[in-house]
Length: 124
Image (cartoon, rainbow, N blue to C red):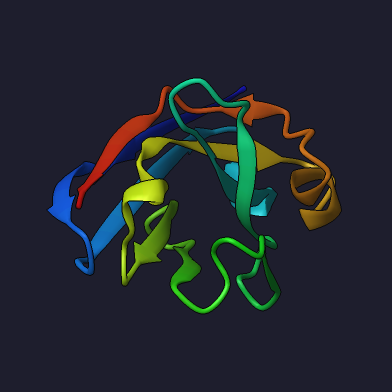
């Protein structure tokens, strides 16, 4: 029902920045809460950030707060994750996610839809 496609990953040095994008399509995608997760090599997938349907409310994991900013442009059906002051430990595949029942569903780690992921690599 909803398709999500991430882009914007790449290789950067520690201290650098990247902006990830997630394009959404499908029925009622503009009314869904959305968010980001990541999975580093050898680790479980972890929650990063969430945003409600309008973009007025956001939530961040402790690892992201103060360095990452989540936003969305509903006219473009696109969500963004601005990542600043990147560290080697931020290296992971970053996944876009969406849920029809609000940001608590994202924060709880139970989104309904997932993207395929985009690789972020931060060199020391």
